[in-house]
Structures are given as structure tokens and as C-alpha cells.
Length: 304
Image (cartoon, rainbow, N blue to C red; front, top):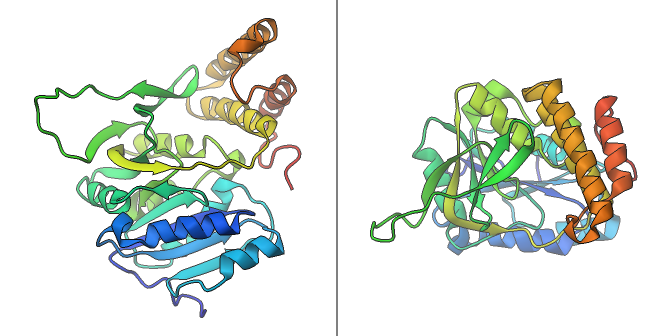
């Protein structure tokens, strides 16, 4: 399709999907976003950023795409944040006020897209917002530990509440987030040092430091049921990037404290394997601490 053909502003909303090697899955995600039951009256112009997929997967992705969709091939696995930045740059070339960002396996429920966009528009003080991943938590950043979940506020059952409730958060979930143009113009795009994981927490902290608020739309549900990343790579990225986040936003003392916690978690996990998290890898954690301490960021070991 001609450059820009599918990017004309449609009711002020753009969608960026970051894809790698899951052509059929990404098409299913695209169908969900374009389904009127999901997006309601909110129209979408779509940019799919392909992070160096195999030719067969790319062919599945490209087959019979609707005219509102553009595919940008990066030719390499840039990671989620850097890949999203490619699509966000395309959005910034348009007139759209709001951009949605999601991975290739996001599955928004009926009404989620429309509710997310409507609630962000209703809160002009908010620069970022996200859908509800259904965990009953509000995304927070603890200055000594990093991104954590906090139980959502308890609502009195006797009080009638909106089906889609706005809750203030520290950062947006990466599964489906919405970004306002004015906020991004002020604070910039994702920090590409993160590659994947914690980049949304960094963006949220930067937005809040610049005077914007961040919200979660409770009841606007989304899932991302797949993960094709090796568990050791996930553990490496989570530990390394949490340390980067703490160093940048809270200082080296906070980073050092978190390193001590990582060491303690590993010792306890070695002694009692049953308490380890699902992605725990001692070797990956050691490399993560080393990389964070020596400022080696970007793609982790083993990523091609």
C-alpha cells in the first residue's frame, strides 16, 4: 500500500502492534482490535512493526491485510520498546491524538478499546492509560524494589459504579496502553536500553515527573496468553531492567539494595526451590546484576 494510505486520522486513534514470528497470532489480535464489538465506535489506523520475523510468519501476517493497516519491517529483533518506537514515530507523523500500543498476542475484550480511549479523553490531565489485565492490582513502583502490584481499591457494593472505572496508577501495563500526543511530545518515547520489560514503568515515572497522571481503566479487560521468550531471558531482563529503573529514578543506593534482595532471593531459592518464581534462573540473575552494574543494556545474551 502507498505510504500513509492507512494512517489518515480516523477519529484520532492509532494502533501500534509489535510483532515477531507469530503471524497467525498477530492476525487474530488485529481482528480483535478491528472488531466493532471490541473497539465500539472508535476507528483505528494501524501500524504493525515486524521485528525481524521469519519469511513464512511474515507472509502469514501480510496476507490479505485490510487497507487501514501498514506493516513496517525492521529486519531485526529490536525488542518491544524499540520496536514500539518505530510505530510511535509513524503515529507522530499523523494527526491522531491518541496511540494504542500492544504486543502481537494482546486480546482485548468487547468494549475495551472504546472504553480505554474514552476514559483517557475524559481525563485531560492524564498522559498515559492502560487496560485491565484482570489481576486485581494497580501498577506501582516501589522505590526500593521496583515495579510491583498493589491491591485495587475496595468498592462498596452498595454504591453504583461505572462498569469502567478510572484508577490512578504509577505506570501503564504493557499489554495494552494508550498514549496521549502531548505527553509523548514532552517526555519522549520508550527508553531503548530496556529492550523489553520495565520500559512502561520508566515511561510512567517520566510522565508523572513531568506533571501528567497515569490511569488504569478497571473493567476494560485484556489478555496476552502467549509467551515465546525463554524463561532465563525473561528473568535476566526483569532483574537487569529493574536495577536500571531504580538507578535512573531513585539512585544507586536503591539499586544496591535491590541487588542485595536479588542475592537473598537466589540463596533462599537455592535452599528452598519450591519458593522460586516461574522464571527464576541463577545464571541469568548473576549476568543481569553484572550487566546492570557495568551499564550493558539493550538486547540480552542469546537474542538474535
